[in-house]
Image (cartoon, rainbow, N blue to C red; front, top):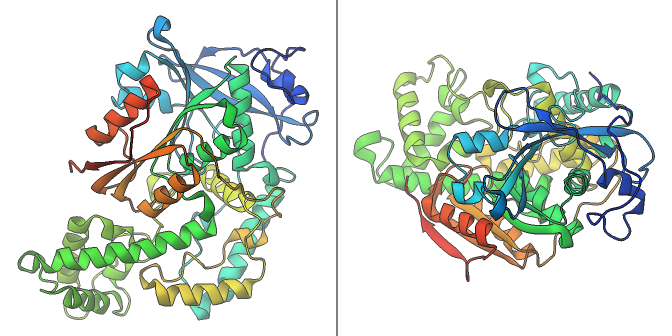
Length: 483
């Protein structure tokens, strides 16, 4: 199904208002559009509207698309500070129902609820915002390149080329415009359409990069930005995948130490070296191999040391001396992003690749470079088997229309991250903190899992204080894990 490019139907005002900055004349009608708020389809407290934006911001008088937006008004109008936009990550994640979901789960306390209109939205290309769909098969619903094997590399190249061609055929003329920079521009149009001079923001995972790009492009319009489980903006996107593969090896080393100390429980070895040796003996057994299936393509299992030890010990027992138990466990899906097993849709994967490929002009175009890089990556980071560097659809994607955003600013932001986050390693948050020199960082020591806000009271207090008062901690903070 192709992206639906719609004609302008949202009423646009003719003159600029206070929400429009100098130099925005070409976009003034978008900033000043009147939004038609209505009850959302879910029957909850949120109201929904469509915000019209240009498909191509270099041609604001050209084709337009609609961005689906939701709003839950501030609980106490007399205390209202402004609007808090939210993004759940991805790229490709729908955020339209995020405010209602976070309120329902008790993540957002009343102190924040009273002060902000909570704003959710589906980024362009996602959900109800002119979705891209590539018609991918179940076998093509994947994120990184496949694990690298010399004998299957030619098939990997063919698969990557086919995926890219499908997306181009079904979304002609659209793919170059599904980018983080354009989503940041959409956020600024949402700001103007809401009549606000600035926005505050809560972004998780990929949403931290989106937030960082917004602060770089529109620093004077960024208020209080919370970036939860962060990416290093200097490593998007191929470098991010490679960094995650490297960090998985660090987690594996930690796991061997933890498991060796509990040899009496798991029986995998009484020293880290013995645990390591036992694991690789299990991993390299002939197929069908349940240990290999459990770990392959998803080395993030080792961040949760207890679950990894219990699972591998159990699979070892099930396999017996020949390792010929039926294959079970992980489907090999990488840790970050959507999973076919979790009900992810073609749109989610199509939007993921659209942003990943169009965001950066640095994707190699020569398949042989991917072959060399994947072979070296597999040698250096064996758990990931070269998947982080292997060829993917971006090698054949339409060339990016803009360079990758360089984030280097002094915008106010609070960055929070677990020490052992498998999807956004701590090094990524450190990199973002260095790039955003006006930020503070909260690290949850020994924290495991993806997403901090709502899971750690210490970090949550820092976030809520910042959102309600605008005051960042005087210095970077360390919180202890409560898990």
